[in-house]
Image (tube, rainbow, N blue to C red; front, top):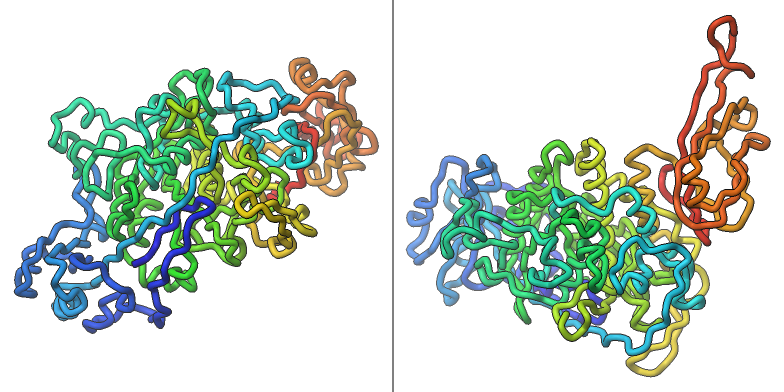
Length: 636
């Protein structure tokens, strides 16, 4: 048995079950080598088998005398053409049957290409955090755009240190308020939450749920839309094998970070939750945990196929294998998680939003065991794997780090106090005012998925077209340096034991990913708009070398254009100028705004008419004004 870790801090450790098999360079045609994960302890009663393209389900009746119920692993959809992934079958049989003996028998048949043992993935247990009784009232330095009452405490969106100047550092956030000036979501974008079931009736989620209208208005017990699943209104419960998605605290919390409804005067805000006008990204619930029950490997694979076939373009996975159950490298994952790997690849290839994005983006949590590598599946090189930071830029005490980890986002830190964890939607909304606090790389991961959803929304609204590969590269480069904060020790108070202890932070340097994600920078990268960062209340001289070339100080500059509205918003009282080749500007208010610098390339005068002179050139910049200046770790 594998144990699947909900990537919430305080999850219990699983019992190891995967040995360290020798990785073969390829799958050969002999019966033994056809069993791709032969050293895994198989779940009783199931096998996954891939037949050759010209074989049919009737072939299984000729291979063995064992009574087998053989069904397509992935129900056929009327909306998708057949692909190689459709040659996989799920075999069900009596649990008293020797799985390994049956697998060996079936593998001998020439019509069989691969045999894979199914594996039961047990849900790891975790503790929910107590609601804070007394919270400081934040004094926000920037006006909040939405009326959701919990937004002032969502430091992870915009942190001005007003919650606590000692435990918060200004700028330790995803810079969301500035991103919201450009987009807060788009209801054409669907994000799948592969997790415990999302509470579709939650007042802060119901208007942003993906709804399969054909099933909602159709006949109960009938596959009204022909997608191979019955009564799948908000997604599908892969544990129970039906369309009844049941509410789960973990899945509901994750979904709220991505797309809780904004500006509805209730509970929390979601990163891509819209403006309260039905324009938030939609959440599709793929339930792989129910109560204390986990799922089988084949159900994980089915969830990814379902997401691609039903319109999701981003899939959030706040789970992963526990380190002691994990693979040693990418080749092992490819070889021994064959059906899951194939299903994820199917999502990456076939998910799309017409005219906006081709391909699907896969986001996983790095894990909470303070382990020196990411965990699979997230550690695989094509998937985004997310580590966690606290409200002061320092690595969260629990986060995994090292090889396989690509990017960092706020995950919170209960040892600083509950309010320094992540506030999002709660299944107990009637008793918790709609929200609750959790921590973990589970909570960091939907911050990245939410930013990705904003990027796709922005593309949809501005007529841009992306591929999933392009979006993945944009995300992992839309970051700021986090290594500079991983120095010395981090003093922690353990609320559970009443003791203090220190964490050495230098072990995290260079191992939390490219940096911490910035939602606003991500949108600017999509526009190819460079950002200039400056601090409120200071006169700044900003080099233009990166944008006009390293000889920028010797250029002849014609003008600096900035609108009166931007000057008012940023508190600019004196029109910016160029001084010694540098942009001279002072801002007294936090925010963002566009500024245009015009210069001449080739001489001191502009050519044209009777002048022999230079070429007029101009660059537009985004001024990003905050109380703290971020160091960019991306490519801008």
